[in-house]
Each structure stands twice: as C-alpha cells, then as structure tokens.
Image (cartoon, rainbow, N blue to C red; front, top):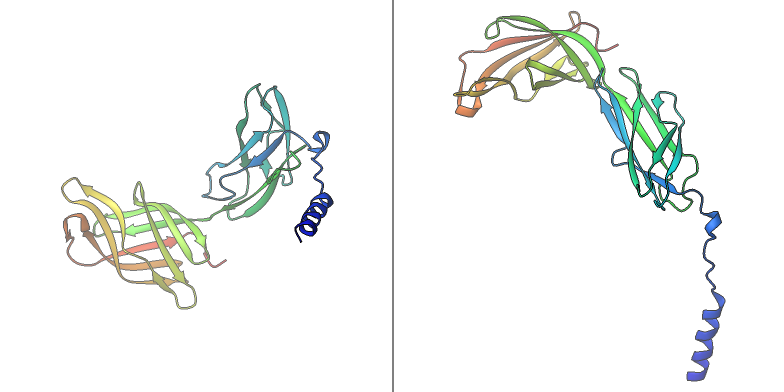
Length: 243
C-alpha cells in the first residue's frame, strides 16, 4: 500500500509544471490607482480629480504616457518620473457643465500587464443651480440673493443661506407642494448665546410664484433659549425647479 501511494503522489506532482511569465511579456512598468472614483461638484468649483501612478521598477528616470476617452476631461499627455521616484499623484481636470454628469476612463499607454488596475474610471456630477432670493423681515430685516443647488430632484441646498458657513437644506414634494426641512443651524448670534437654529413649524411650495414659504421659530439651542414668536421665511426660485 505504501508503495502504491508513493507512486500515486509522484505521478500527480509530475503532471503540473509551472512556467514563469516571460520578462519580455509583462507590458510596461506602471499601473494606476485612485482613492476616489466618484465626484460631485458645485457649479463653479474646480473639478479636480486625483489618480496615482505607481512604477514597478523605479531605478531609472522615465516618462509615462496617459490618455482619456472623454474630451470633457483634461489629462496630462505624459508624466515624468525621476530615478528612484516610484509613485506620483496626477491631477485630472473635468469640465462637466452645470447640471451634467460624465464618466471617463484614464489609461496608461503601456501598463504593467499583471496590474489589477491598469486604468481608472471616474464619474463626475455637477449640481444643477438656480438663482434665488431669501426674504426674512422680522429678524433679518430684508431680503438677499442666493444660489440654490439641486442635490437631487426635489432636494435643494442653499450655501451660506443666512450666514457664511451655514448651508440650508430642504425638500419639495411637487405632487403635494409640501416642503420638509430638518431643524438646522443657520447663523452665529454671539459668544454668549452661540448659534441660531431655524426650526420649521410648517412649510409649503407655491408653484405659480416658485416660492417656498416657511413658518419657523428661531432658537438658541446652545443656551436653551430662543426668540419669541414665529417668523416667516420665504425662498424664491429664479427659475422653475420642475423644468
């Protein structure tokens, strides 16, 4: 029995012979990775995308060529490496129009054959933007222009709505014209009282006038206080958000 088993094992071992890959058939000397492949930008923001090129052998200086399959993205024609330089970040710049989205594949001209990522595909979305006006007379005493970003259909954000650094978000159900918004900090009152929060009591959308009407309380949650009474807030779209 031992003799038979030994013969069997020997026979199996001889059937599999590993042939190493030829050094001349491994393609180029580099591959590419990206920490982030999905980007969202606000209108006017630089659409900067970062990819990283890695070299297998970094002993010599080398120039590595890149390409892209979408003309909305600007990619360097080549990236230069110094001797000893193994990795390098590369900036790709998108030019996707406001309200649009696009995908692109960034490739190395001659990538390392056995790399898991010889190319990187990225997607870019740019929020749609509306001009707008905010009116709040009782506490803020006036009205002012704003930009309204469409995060998704029926979902909106006003950057720096009442004060710098405080964005305001809300949703519109165009079937019922109901508006929903969470309690949100919108301003800083002072060092003694802290931040101001807008707490909606009710809110509706008037499609004829493209206007959101919010009946709200303004509170000072940092000190457990608030302003007396309820206060109307109006947000008017410059363009029809349904179109």
